[in-house]
Amino acid sequence: MTGAKLLLSYNMSSDNANAYYQFFLGRYIPLMQTLGLQISEAWHTAYGPYPNRLVGFVTRDVELALALPQNDTWIELNNELIGYVANFSYKIVLYREGFQF
Image (cartoon, rainbow, N blue to C red; front, side, top):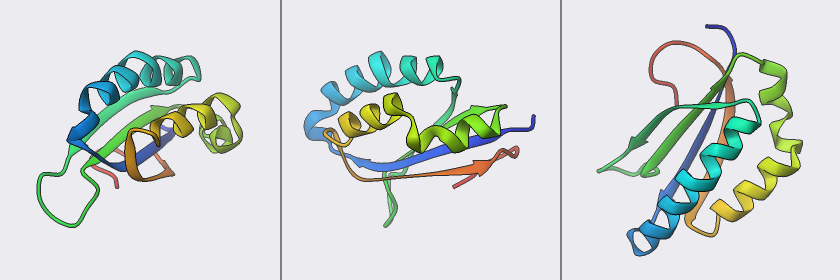
């Protein structure tokens, strides 16, 4: 596959895990799909000085991925996500097989 991968990293608190999961599974992922991205992976870091969540979304459309930071829906979703997590960051990379961070 050629395309791009959007990588989200953040720390999720167990204090609001239920609300986070309801938002992420019920709103974030479906709206990302309407934007043309599919979730590809979700990783949890159990130990070490790294964010405890790494989530990947993929698209074949590199231009779509590069335009995401200016997309109003994506901005709104991340502003809401920030209410559930800490140390949120993202990056857009060219897709390749295997683990990317």
